[in-house]
Length: 71
Image: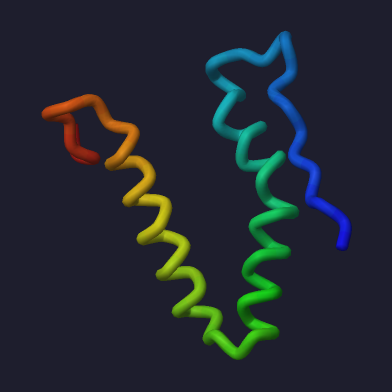
């Protein structure tokens, strides 16, 4: 099985485009993951919800002490 490649941030990337370029770099792997989950029998809405929850948990883990997702 071939490993998914994710592009690195470009050295000349700006703060204004960083998030958009990160999404662009992750999108093929994200779509591949959702496709594999659907092929395994998971409902698309449940896949999206599970990925959203996992992402929110990752954000919370990365937040500095005392900061919440709403700060």
